[in-house]
Length: 387
Image: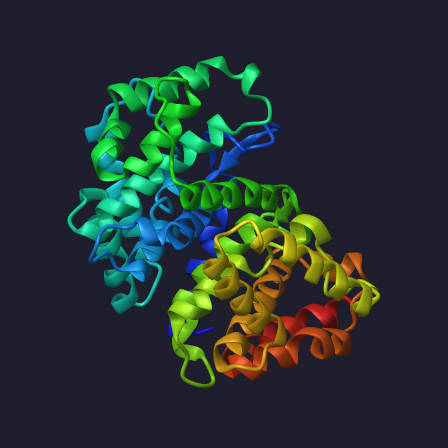
């Protein structure tokens, strides 16, 4: 089959699924396992959204979010490098440059150049937006450790945080992001200064939504090794939206679409995942999700609660052009994962070709018809072979 622009985009999006298998050294908040780089990238992007009021003047929020969504993709080839381990950082830089060339090079040239440029801008801290993105990248593992449910079991991680804040790179937060520095040093007992109520509310929300990393879906990773969790899924479909935006059926505001996708599954923390091919009481499920939205968004300051709740409601209603496209990429990502794994959840749930069309296909086609058309041959081949 001849290579097309869309096939190159899908090849990239499939390849970066591997970021979900790259483990970091820090634990998720419940202390049960280490975090992976894909769910870390989702959480960081949410940090950028929730803490946007604390960003320096002139910071471009969408640029920051995009940088954080893609900043660790090179780890697919080079792995994660903990800050407390002896490391030849010059050698790592050379490896990462090669990884960026390979991975972003899977995309059409214009997109490859754009993403590579943004990644380099982030790495070199070449702009105010890049500097803010770096500061958020420093903050997230600090608070993930300090709020860890099993903090007594990881004294070495506390020591790393303390050293990072006193003499490491995070010391810069004292002047560049004082609210975060005050909160972290206060939790360590080395400061009596109180952080603001607004910051505390935002941070409480960000800590609580870490739980999305413990919600597992019916869909597996593209290598079939395990089920995908909803945090890393949210990262992946935000990347889908960025890369596939040009295929939207109608004009969209990509920044709004990405924000929707960062928050769209948060209610699953309370409601759990409900597979598209499962059997559910839709009214009961909707009521549970509304209650979850009340609780979770209610942790935020009132204006942000109002704005993000409205954005989540818009996604759920799927009536605006932005929400229709967001729903399309949310529905198509599991389809591609199932094709990569020889059927995946289709076999598990005994899905028919018509059922796929009724529950998934029309939603993808409504927002991105070219995308659904492009997948037809692969989909039909699987159902023909597995009839």
